[in-house]
Length: 112
Image 1 (cartoon, rainbow, N blue to C red):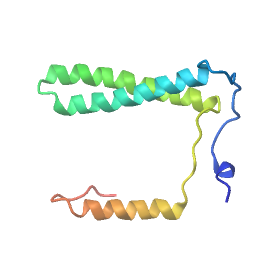
Image 2 (tube, helix red, strand yellow; image 1 turned 45 degrees about the vertical axis):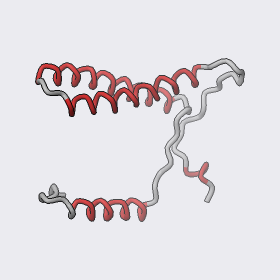
Image 3 (cartoon, rainbow, N blue to C red; image 1 turned 90 degrees about the vertical axis):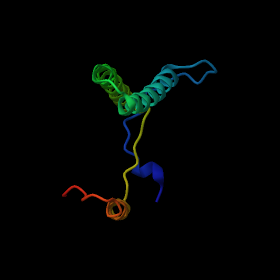
């Protein structure tokens, strides 16, 4: 099966093919930065020792997460970001693997 046939993608908006950065390059760069920042703020929230600091970081985290989603949506809309659907059997295997990991924890896993 050809992977391109399985892609979930809008028609791609054309961008100039030049050595200079184009709109797609800029958006991709910013999206990568937002992903990095979201992960970093998540770590900072986990390690915040003061509730007011936690709340401030959480507020910034939410803004960053929302911007990340908006950038992703814009890139997907323009056809610059595609998805590949996973086969149901692979999803089932991943769920079983996760359930196996959960059974190793010393607490009861959440009910499904």
